[in-house]
Image (cartoon, rainbow, N blue to C red):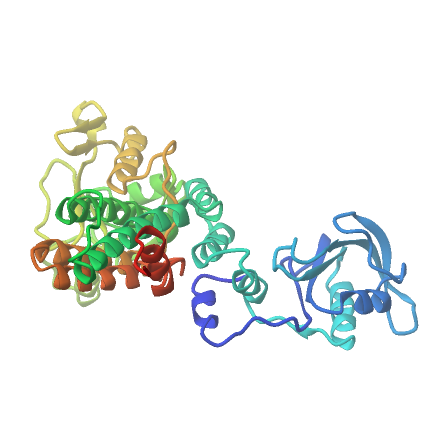
Length: 446
């Protein structure tokens, strides 16, 4: 199955084809069951040579058979499933061979498939064929990869939403509104002497489009955080409890904890889940003046991590915090409340906790998830960085169109640019759709 970023790279170079391709659809290694998938044309002739039943089974009926070599000797005993075009994942004839999961067995059956003329599939090629044959749009194909690679429950839910079409429907709805507005504006410019009725004023509709696109962009930004996660750097003075906090968050002794200041030198990284949000957290060296060359290097790296992190957890143990430069969000954490008999929780934007006892850790997880705009019960659709980039461009073009609404030709040109970037999300609209919209709504051809 495709990994993140595979499909966009393959799209320009690969054309729809019925050439037989084959590959294992289950992870390598020893297991109870393995699946080999074949897609393409001439499936009946292929099945006759590899199945002991010598024919294709009825579509979507699990059929027990042996997988045989050129001498009709069994290589494995399993189940085959036939999906007849166009009612298959790829839109082509698809045959799945479900056999035992031993690596030698899988290798022998796959080799037999290649002997019979199938080509070893490229990474993501089955999903690419599904896209080229209209079974999935590009956003859904990417969502499938996101679902496979999801490392949290919230990320998986969001990917399922996109795979089911939620993201595409949102993009298509926005694109349809934009196309209708373009059609009205083109008609007003080209047929100014005709009595052409449009809906509301272009300026008002432009403002609505801009708001709609901006909301969509915000949802996509949340979706990318689910897919890629956030980075959080733990920053503070020596012995403020940074390593203890890391250990509490990742529920393991990931970092050494001692009473000796300056124990942590190199950054320590761990991936955790905070209420559905994937978080790469890094423990850093305590910030102070030091003459030790190794510790000074650790401090330099700590500052670097603080500057590039999406979130900085600034630890205060009651003795103050160091001065740092951040580009992301800063969250102040008051540690060692067990020593000062303070209550845990979030007050005035500060999280109160004890990294030693674990009191208040869940409050910190919840606050991190809030900052990431993700909760357990509300997950947006999944999105990619390319989606965010395209929407940012579309929003910028819509702003230009709205600012130049009085000059309809200029506004229309910016709208065209906005739609070109928007349609790259799923490829749902092009200029032919715009022409169809114009001709269907106005009697231009009279």
